[in-house]
Length: 146
Image (spheres, rainbow, N blue to C red):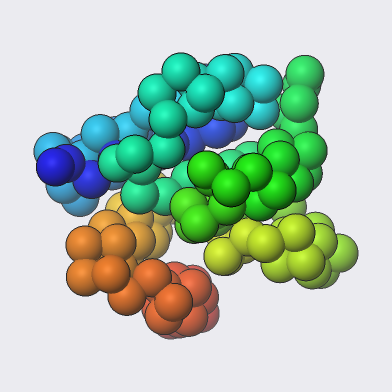
């Protein structure tokens, strides 16, 4: 079965860049997308969690924001074990702390450089495929400080 990502972000340009970078890292990965938390939840209820390897979740979105969706995902049995990476323009310490408190696996500030996004997604893909998701965040953060 193919690796499957879900990107939830209201910014169409960010979704496009993410998908392009992911396709360059591994073109066979399926990247589902949603523009807000409500749309994502609706899709998840339709398709179910089977085969979904990881969720990238923006914080600031209309209709249902990332915090609201993260709370639901971690509360519902069907979704609570899917790793969630908060993927935001924020680098605020309070947001980072809130993400971890609500059950996110990792907090990644959206990089400005496309090449860095590719490297981050390369680490994610390798971690998902090797089932070593626990060390993924440290590897991502070491990229950003290198």
